Length: 459
Image (cartoon, rainbow, N blue to C red):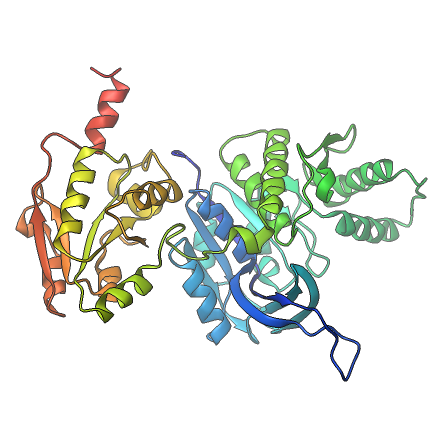
């Protein structure tokens, strides 16, 4: 969707692993299940998951978080960098890692390691917050939000997703989104501080409404939305709460649903939605997220391309049989006959075609605000639907040189509307014996011309 506002996410990143197998017996030396044939899936966690999900929505995202130089942080960078801008804060200790072992899709045990903590902000992080139109704080209690608290006080976030280990949201935050268990804990702490613990009468909805109203006052937030899992969320501005139910109950893996809720709510508020509208949209998005399998189900392909074959694997298979690898590139915002003709011709040159497509932020820098019309996941899906396209790879820079250096295609194709001087990739291809070529382009076809005609009513 075009026109989505950019978002800065501030918080503590994790690296999450799922080891998924099956268990049909107990170990002989202890009454514990033996989980066999485990498959490993690695994905962003914590604030990194919230930022990643917002970026996959087609939004320009900057993530400010603590990262060290260890293997877990390097893996997280690999997962995130094609999708968003990373601003790393120095941290002591290693990046926190969370490993779940699942049998028949159900968690058996969780293993945590990494005690890394952010102790100070940087000038780059402060500069990223300065012009930010909207900020989401995803506080997992590892110090990122605390290090930037003065800047956050000066520009209160649109959403603060709290954690028992973290500090309170800054006054003026537009929406705070604790879970039910967090709401109970934070309310008990606030009432203890105020010396006036309230009794609860056994009516859970009444209790949640009391907790949300208490936290609005205690945190001096504009609103608090307590997430209630399969029952939706309760939104309070301090009185007369609004219950936002789910449209359909799902009992899938809820891992990451809170991050999905916070990322959606923050994005909608950044786009100008009212708080109630943002909470309704966030409940819908979190429900769909759980129905799709939670973080594990949605992130089966945790790096571009979101759909289709992995380009590196495809190229390796083609090269193993002595085949020729062809690559073509572009924004492909509104796919038209000129694009299709070019890609069909490119595919006939060799034994596979990899399309290198600009990320949303890259398109925006090249084409201006309002572009792309179609977000990256939609553009990739349409390209992969073409029979002539074997794989899609995404690059975030203005030009694809870095990606081409990784893929090392034998042939690089551009449309005939490019002059030789406009092909800086040509010299790069020569480094590994590749060749850049121009192919004829259907005259008069362009995404810009199509949009101009549409804006003019088709004249």
